[in-house]
Length: 484
Ligand code: BGC
Image (cartoon, rainbow, N blue to C red; front, side, top):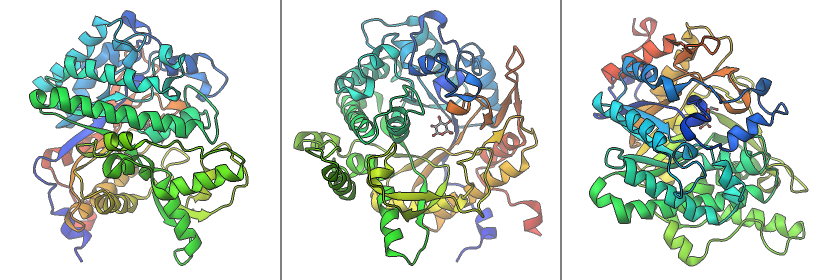
C-alpha cells in the first residue's frame, strides 16, 4: 500500500487541467445591462419572500460583466491552465430564442474567450447553469417538451459563434439540482413545487435536450471545430449507515440510482433510467393510484438517441452521506417518497462554512472509483469541488486549504492507486459570489470579494496562494511537519 507520504512526491499527470469554475448569474451582475433579458433567477430574487438570505439578488453580484479584467487578473495570479464559466442564455438571446440576438452579449463573451486564449488559458464553457430565460419559463421552461428543440437552437448558435475557439463544452450544470430544487421542492428558481412529478418531467427533457445538442455538435461542428461535449453531474458519495445491514446497503444503492445514475446511466450507458429507479417509482405510483408510473419513459428511438452522448465525464463533488432505509407512505415534497432513504451526516465529520457541507475528502476517491467501474473508465474532469466560509470570512483560511489539500491527496490516490482517468480539477469557485439561497452569506471563493466596496475589490485568500503553488508545480506539497 502506497503511503500518503509517497503520494506527495507524485506529480499530477502531464497536461492535467487546473481550473476554477464560476456561473454567469452568480458573478456577472449587469442584470439589465446592454439588452440582457431577464432570467428565472432575476424574477425569483426580485419577488422577495425571504427565499434568499436577506432577499439578496444577483443584480450586481461580483460585477464581472464590467469587471471581467479583474477576474482575469485573479485567474492569472492562480496560474490556471483552464477556466470554466457559463454563458447567460438571456444575455445572448434575451427571449431565449434566436429570433433576437443581443450583439452586446456576444461581444462580452468574445472578449472573455479571447482574453483567456491570449493568456494561454483554455476556456471550458457551460451553456446552462440554472438561469433559464424568463420568456421561456413563461412557456413552462424545462417542463415543456418544446424546450428540447429550443435549447438545441441556443446551443447551435453558441457553437457557431464561439466554437472556433471553445473546445470544451458542458450543456447543463447539475440537472439533478435543477430538477429537484427548481421543480420539486421549489427552493431554487423558478420555485415550482410539484413533488413526485416535476423533477422527473424536467429531468426527462434535460436529458433529451443534452443528447440532441451532443448530436448537433457531432453532426455539424465536430469535424471542423474538434471539440467535445459533456454534461456536469453532481453526486454526493453514499455509504450504508450500518455496513452490515442489507437494508441500508439497498437504500444506498437506491440513493445512487436516484442521483448520479438517474442521468449518467441513460447518457453514458444505454439511454434508459436505472432499473431500480423505474421499479421504485412505478411501485409507489401504483400505490398512490396513478394510472402509470410518474417516471416518464423514453421511446426506443429516444434511447438510441441518448446513449453515448458525452465525450468525457464531468463530476461535481462536495460531500458524502451515510444512508439508511426510511419508509415514506405518500409522495412527499422530495424524491425521498420514491427512493425511501434517509441521509445522515456523520457527527464526526467537520462542517465547512455551510450546513450541508460535511468535509469528507475520502468520498471523492470512492466516487471516482465508482464512476470508473460503472461508466467504463471514462476521462473524468472534476468540474466543481469546494469549501465555504461564512461571512465575514478570514483571509487566512488555512483550515479550508487543509481540506483542499486532503481532497487533492485523495485524487492522487484515485489516479495512482485506483487508476482512475482524472484529467482535471476545478475549484468552486474563483470568487466569492451569489450562493443561490444563501446570497452573499457563504463564501466559496479563492478570492474574497468586498461586496460593500463600489469597486467590488478582489483579494486572495491563503487558499489562493496555496492553490497557485500546486498549479505551478503540478504536484501536491507535503505539509512541512509531515516531511520530518
Ligand atoms: C453549483 C454552484 C454552487 C455550488 C455550491 C454547485 O452545486 O453548481 O452553482 O454555488 O454548488 O453550493
